[in-house]
Length: 54
Figure 1 (tube, helix red, strand yellow):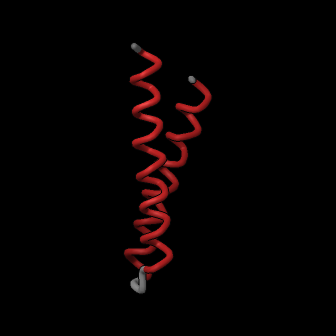
Figure 2: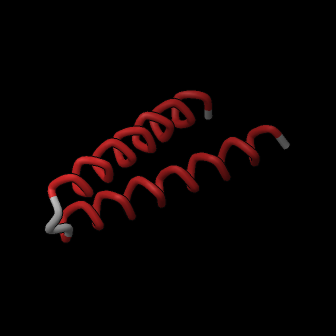
C-alpha cells in the first residue's frame, strides 16, 4: 500500500515537472520563466527523492 502511494506521488511530481518545464520553454516573460524554473526544479527534486525510496 505504501509503495503504491509513493508511486502515485512520484508520477504526480514527474508530470508537474514536465508540465512546468514545457511552459517555461514557451514563456516570453522573464519573471514568469524564473518562477516556472523554480517550480520545475522543486518537482524534479521530489521525483528524485521518491525514485530513491521506491
